Amino acid sequence: NAGVTQTPKFRILKIGQSMTLQCAQDMNHNYMYWYRQDPGMGLKLIYYSVGAGITDKGEVPNGYNVSRSTTEDFPLRLELAAPSQTSVYFCASTSGRMAYEQYFGPGTRLTVT
Amino acid sequence: GQSLEQPSEVTAVEGAIVQINCTYQTSGFYGLSWYQQHDGGAPTFLSYNALDGLEETGRFSSFLSRSDSYGYLLLQELQMKDSASYFCAVRDAGSSNTGKLIFGQGTTLQVKP
Image 1 (tube, chains in turn red, yellow):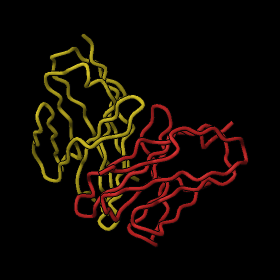
Image 2 (cartoon, chains in turn brown, red):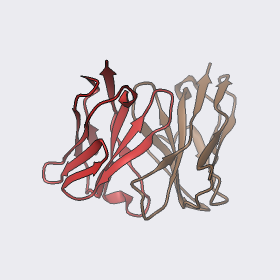
Image 3 (cartoon, one colour):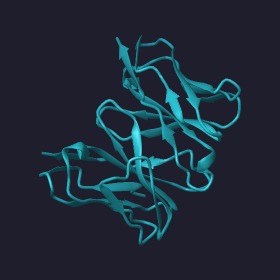
Image 4 (cartoon, chains in turn yellow, blue):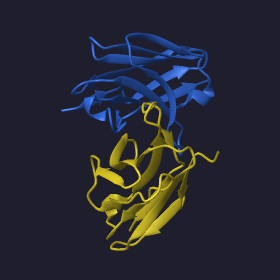
């Protein structure tokens, strides 16, 4: 099992550009999450999904969008990138039964200049 | 509101024991999780307490007191590789169908020789 994979690992965007962060998991987990982590801080939930076709906002959704067309994939879209979106982005997944144990991808380091 | 508090930094020497505390304030409560994150890496799950008491996993133990809204992570026989950030995370009443976790800001543990 590859677990949770994320691409790209690093990206530099100019202000106003858009991009999609990819996330995939091969554990057949229904629940998936997107977090951002600013330096020295905890994880803040951006969006989450409890199954294909079902998504909902987390704590900090502004400037982002998601879709969940399959169980495996949960891409995060950034529209009109801003310097405030410079952060490390983590995707995570879990089964419903053991939701306290989330599996994280390696992260995407995004810089917006 | 919902909040978790943990110390920002802890320093200890190799071979020693260190305790990282976490107090929480949430609307309802299912359990307390602990995650480890090495610098530049992804968070990884360490332990989970749903009931009062101590859970032991090798050199790591986690404790929960629901009546005190308090838990801690105990690391014994510290090794240099234990230098990392440690996050507590709670599942609150709203997470039963979503698996959402609320993360603390993290405690940076520095292990010195």
